[in-house]
Amino acid sequence: MNFKLPFFNALLLIAFMSCSDSTSDEFDGANPDAEAKYIKTITVLSAQEGEEATVTVNYDANDRVSSISNGTDSSVFVYNNNELTNISGDGDNLNIEELYDSPYNAFEVGEVTSYDSNGNPKTIAFSQTEYDYENNIEEEVEYTAEITYDANPNPYFYTLEAAGIIDVLDNVDLHLTMNTSSDQVVQARLLFPLNNITGIQYKDENGVLIFELDADYVYNSADYPISGTVVGTDYYENYEGEIETETSIFSANYTYRD
Image (cartoon, rainbow, N blue to C red):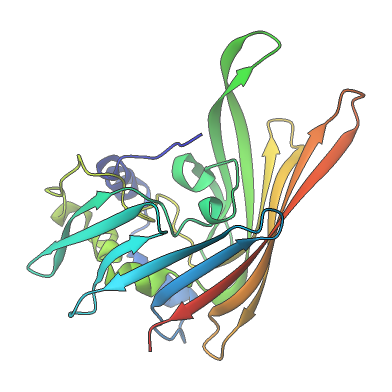
């Protein structure tokens, strides 16, 4: 399922829900010693299927993000007077839930119910429409996502800043003329992580764990991930009512601009 908020609606919700501090101020507060690093590629390999996908971030002569592509879908960034004015194309290539095949989209449709001490979304409530095969109907199902972080900076922050996204989040009222008929902006989120996500646990309305992502990274001297292993575990009930698991393992490699 693909639940994506239109960029215009996302901006309005950010305007009403955000704290008085800007995204930049909050990031700096959580990461006072962060060094600016700009993603060049992220390569993800599925251990089960042997399939490899590479997300490539391209930059123009002014060091702005010009496009992001995974080899199939691309998002193209358009600027006017050095301000982001439009994003065309498809793709959601910097979303951890998309990168590692999570069946849920908490970071696109959820509502934060608690934050950690750094200001990161800690618990997110969200719902998805799912099909009830037993009763032959569609129903809205409530879930929660519990997110954990390490102390390192969100590795996507400066890349998003180079794409004009952070400026848009910090100056919502100045950007309402953006073409809202374009596809959704990559990583224009209601729920912006300030640190690096290391785990997500998804639970049903009864608090039962149904899926989780667990990431273990190797970092460079600037505390940005250069490689990592991500394990996705699906918990489900078999016909005998017993809980079984199915595990997917991904490896990831990051490169950055010099």
